[in-house]
Length: 330
Image 1 (cartoon, one colour):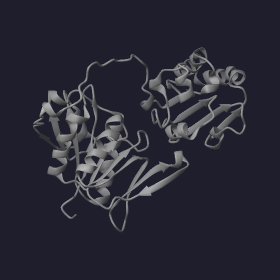
Image 2 (tube, helix red, strand yellow; image 1 turned 180 degrees about the vertical axis):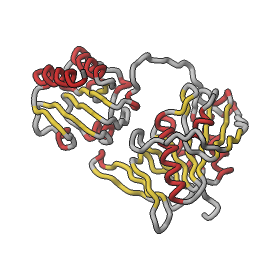
Image 3 (tube, helix red, strand yellow; image 1 turned 120 degrees about the vertical axis):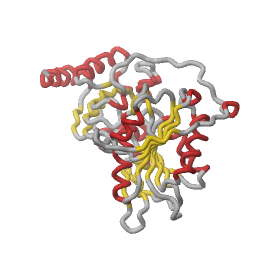
């Protein structure tokens, strides 16, 4: 086990820029490497990567392994996996971190299996055990009702982190680092998935990046009701989310569903309107800094996690609530 050392993070790139969760990975990875007194490295795959490798150094990486290849431009697991496996075998890191994204949850378990190790997904806190120097990985369990701290006894130690759960990297333009360019050497005949079509939806602030989210549930009752939520979200410069029942009823788009089967969010302010607070939904929003709930059922589960609550029919409470918020935002 002694040959494994260093912290390695995988940074996702979108349109030539590091994603927000990648900035959190860089901040967390640098902190952990400092506590372990070891090296800190990043790997970037895709095409084109533009200035993203330089940005990774500015954000704290000492070395950046880069595979800029046209065969990686579609971000397919089949093409990323062999390249990442090769980098990990070359670097021999003690810790490998990725974001809890579609890509992260698909890749990390496969990489852990191929490395004869294990992975812990959806971590909301990472620390170093003072005695063993192993990674302490904290994640929600039982639908977000409790937290478990887990340790991996094999190397590398793999983990994904939940977006908005950790502090992003502090930029320092004076930082210097090494960019190591690698050949992907992809065998495209072994890539069994193909990107047939990409559809871009024009939207406002991405749900995962929003500082404020106004989320509606089954009790909203219609697509018209969600338009009222959208109006307040615009005032707060936030985004609109929805529970699964609301999406199933087509009152909101499937891509704004929050929960275990939807998106995991951690905004500064989460306004939950007319939703009961099922364990599935709470698993998607429990990382919110402040939760405000409006529900006519005083026994609704959402009030067990809400910091502030209004027990009332949302249709009656909304005009005065939204009006006061708009007044404060002026």
